[in-house]
Amino acid sequence: MSSIYGKLFSVSTWGESHGEAVGAVIDGCPAGLPLSEEDIQQAMDRRRPGQNTLVTPRKEADKVHILSGVFEGKTTGTPICLAVWNENQHSKDYTEMMNWYRPGHADLTYDLKYGFRDYRGGGRASARETLARVAAGAVASKILKLACGTEILSWVESVGTVTSNVDASKVTLEAVEASPVRCPDPEASEKMAKAVAEAKFAKDSIGAVLALDIRKPPVAVGEPVFDKAQAVLGGALLSISAVKGFEIGEGFHAAELHGSENNDVIRFEDGKYRTLTNHAGGILGGITNGETIHCRIAFKPTATIAQEQETAGRDHQNGTLAARGRHDPCVALRAPVIVESMAAIALVNLFLEQRARKLF
Ligand SMILES: Cc1cc2nc3c(=O)[nH]c(=O)nc-3n(C[C@H](O)[C@H](O)[C@H](O)COP(=O)(O)O)c2cc1C
Image (tube, rainbow, N blue to C red; front, side, top):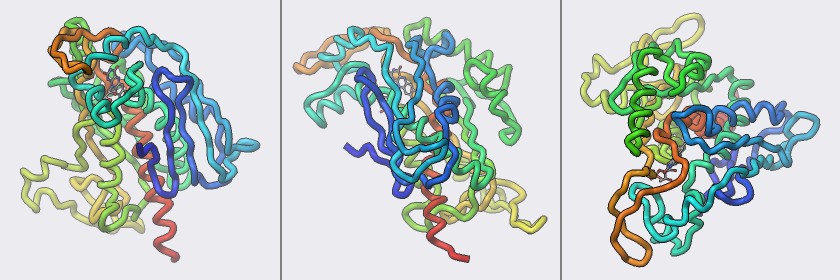
């Protein structure tokens, strides 16, 4: 089971939703990076459940502990182990999932693959695993921020059919966090909150699209053939639970354009190359050009819903299941920081690789 991501800044995540703890081991973080638990906790708090009535009511402090790899406030270049103890499991909610497969979830495919699974809380398929990615992502973000001034920001762009209208370059973290659905457009935010509340009331769930901006990214990172920056970023983002689609720049819309509309005019100004538009989304030939990397990530509606649905079970029986448990009616509302974290981990790997590509 490959739980390890990245060649140079390698992140291994471990732990199950209803086990003792979850966490990450980072191997390859350069020495000398100032790092405290507080740096990581800020990101963890944005992912935490129970923040309002539109997300899962599971209440956990999600307090991160640095168990190794940091001495006197700086990384030592040795493996950094980050751990969070699980506190608020309700394993009884999952007894039906022992015998019945939730439509849309990973219960059936885990059984097909392993023949045996930790059904409590979804085990490794639980979004609790993403907590480890957020912890490691906070470290990756700090490296990119200190080395290049990179800022990574994600927000909710649409929920169901409700879409927002914002100038992406002006979106701030404060505006995103001020919205209960993490949408910086106040009018759309209100409509989205209503759509999520209605889905929850109907014992249903709803999907959403997230926007991702990587501002001031490292320039010239990404490999020209297989490890193109968009392939690495896409792979990292598609590895997040419930992600079903990824676009960069104009994405699928580029297929509707002519070259004269889609090409970005290049200019040399103030000592550097810029483009007047950014249809490419900051990457050409698999290599970053220094413009903002802009992506869109589609999240499906939460699989576990309280509505009765037809399904099949472990003993080859057919029947129905109305799932119990505390679930997010729209998983994407807690996902912006997860998206930012995976983008940071992917990009820091490309950044460190580029250091071996060019001497002068
Ligand atoms: C932040 C976040 C929260 C999630 N919460 C739930 C949840 O409460 N209930 C659920 O069934 N799925 C939830 N998911 C999605 C499942 O983990 C995911 O759908 C499942 O593992 C199957 O994988 P797949 O959808 O990628 O195929 C969540 C995902 C994320 C990113």
